[in-house]
Amino acid sequence: MTSILKWLATLWAYAGGICLLAIVLVTTANVGAFGLDRIAALWGTDVSGLSGYEDFVRLTISVAALMFFPYCQSQRGHVKVDLFTDRAPRKVNRALDALWLLITVVTAMFLAYWMWFGMLESRADNQLSRVLGWPEWPFYAPGIFSLLLWALVAVAQLFERDLPTAETSRG
Image (cartoon, rainbow, N blue to C red; front, side):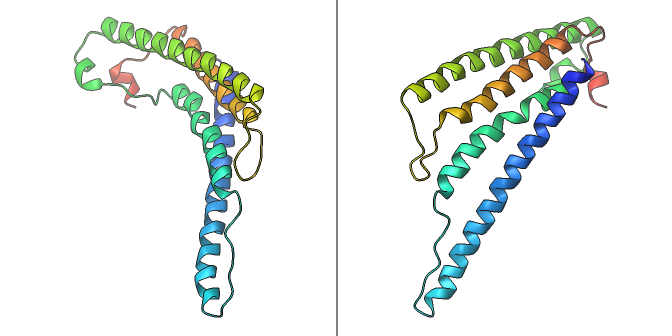
């Protein structure tokens, strides 16, 4: 696989980690506000939670969830059933690996194709988040990019000269 794709997949996963960190920080602040509200209630006052918290988490997790797929693929961290292939000949393992890479490419492209139309429909319908009023269509773009990058990484692996086998993928 080209080093550029691997670098891009890694960078993209770091961006996904930053999204998850933002979710954790916002969730912590919201839970803290609820705790402070309980304490403040003892003195007859209140502390409100973060307005739009659910909107933020829903939209951000939709972005972050797919951002790790390209990196996992670049590390060959996808699900693989070694139990059945451990004792198979090297040619069989190579053929199965190529088959699963091809299926991965087709699946990622299929999902990106439909996500593209989902984004266009969301934009045409002017969908907004319920509390914050943010347009939802821009949050599709990172997911589409993630799926395309995932497919590119799998294609690059498909054309590598030495496909791993069950013996070499374990470490």
